Length: 270
Image (tube, rainbow, N blue to C red; front, side, top):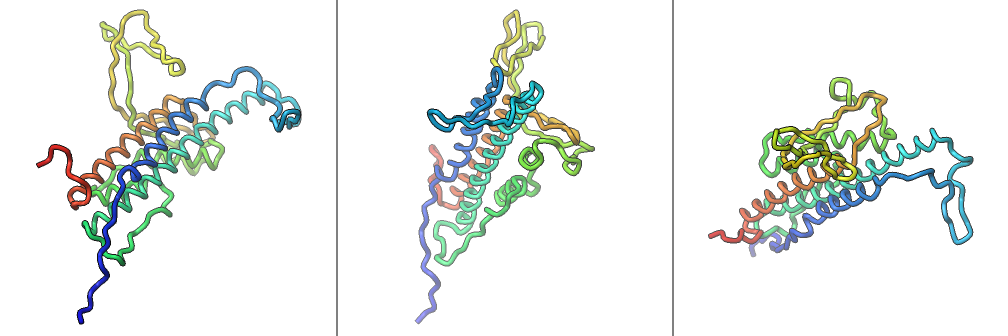
């Protein structure tokens, strides 16, 4: 008798399932910030509807004008916080699936029955998790600075009521939030740049302009005691950053799977 090892088992990796959390997270972020950032018009609602004839008071007594302004500011921060947390959570799920696919790809087309893949679900830091995935894809020194800054901002929004504490001022006494953004500029025939309204999308120009699109690093700095405040336009830029960077990772994953003989060859390949 021969001591044969466990029989290999064939697995099917559904690439649509791998990328689904990224697609869902980006779509939800764009939609949530678009709907949730619409300005609150007039005074705040003072009662919460419980039923056809039942309402509960939200405030013990009518809030002052200053208190209403504070509540509106807190709501805006909550929307931003919720968007970034949800986007980050879905990005984590996506990276977990990419990592698992890479684990199996390393085994080739046939995976031993007793193979136990390493998991990274318990890693809660986006920058560390992205770094591990990029390292597995072959990057010797992964650049995760933007992801680290966004993770720091999300933590301040979630755990410090959006106010930067002194121990989070990592960049020369301030908290820096950065991302690679698609930047649009509107230039007239004389090379003069004209601003545009980030709420309405209207170009504020009295003469024809052409659009100029570039990708640039955006960096916002917030001092200790300052409230993190990102515009809806900036949050959409961040969602696009996740979408683009996540898409690059997915393309590299597919290439790795093809090299392992797991994914089908690219169309037009010999």
